[in-house]
Image 1 (cartoon, rainbow over the protein chains, first blue to last red):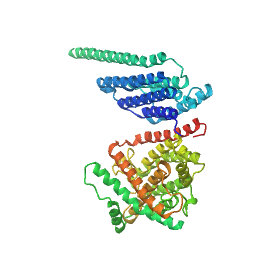
Image 2: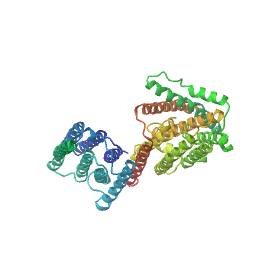
Image 3: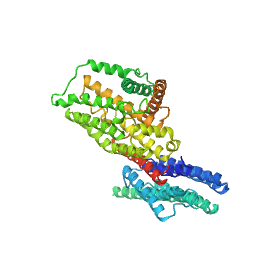
Image 4: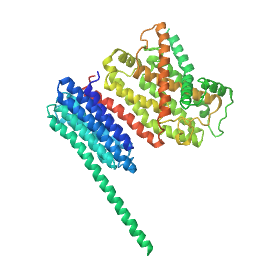
Length: 219
Length: 316
């Protein structure tokens, strides 16, 4: 029968592959938001089953921060930089990147089962899925040039870490897990500021270069 | 008795196949707020074509003329071996399993492509070339799907797979099964020319399936088109009866049950046709080279089915 861990684990792997398939940043961000909500639902389930409030609180935090706040912030940033709306020069072609991501998932599953006890945590063998997703997220960062998509790749890795921690090591204190989630918010804000500064510096350079060229033309 | 049921199944598929093609076109037009053709338009078209004379390119060999008379019976034969109205094998049921059925589908497609090349038309060559490059990737995925179904039921016989899924809620609810359903649905979209692949357009950019019979006319074209409708009907039925909704297909010989199931099957087909129409009207068409991305995702679904099976240690 369908296991909640199986559905969640394979669900996030599949959503990761959907992200690899997409070209438009808004769709990638939306898929990431759905993935985060799936992670939050899994944590909520874990909290209800174990009768612990910690996973439930973490689920609420995850849904609010990764499922809503961060995607909204990214999309808002995207509106200000419309030329970043799609990945036009991926490092690796879409079909090849899906295949490589699949190969990395298989490698991740094998590595987990080879290196870590497969009976670890409540999710048992399914704990290998978030571990495999780590590789999927890292590969997303490598395979794309668009800064927003790379950021989504980073967030995907963080989602995988969170899920792995809660499935494989359910005793982790809330303060650590909460800190991971809130760190992300800080990273998104800082990355947004850095990108804004970079755009401004590029455009001011361009303006200076254009002014110099105009002066040259005057003779 | 089984022979009678076989003939009944043959008549059911051959006669109703153009109707579902007609319903699909009509619903698509309605969704575009157009009046649309009658749902029986495909029958009128076939009748018209059967009455018209055939024009054959002077450069084509006799094979070009013979090909539709070879492929059409192949599709009719497949109606006798697949579980359409019963979940127990009819007279010809034990002749082939899924792999065998897939080979017959593949043989029919190959004959069509050779005939298209034989016509010496550039557009027919274009269609055959594109169809070959897509099917070279999609058909191995189909084989992978059948192998995964073999894991599920211990055989590649579609009747046994149907019985297994009907009787075992554990297998029906397994991740392996649902990933296979997803993969087969995507292959079904490719094989029946629905969006986002859309191979049934006559525009040059998307010319795939329509390019192959471009030099045919009269009776040969009618057989070509009718065979296409039968193929679509069969694949949709397999998706419904074996993969996604295997329930209610009669597992024992009972005429009232089979009669009742005919109407249930009709409703199932109608719903799937509506889903196709909705997809065709809401999903953007892919650029030709982007079709391979779609096929790669189909492969991903099939591979994840295998991984789901492996991860649970071979259990459910």
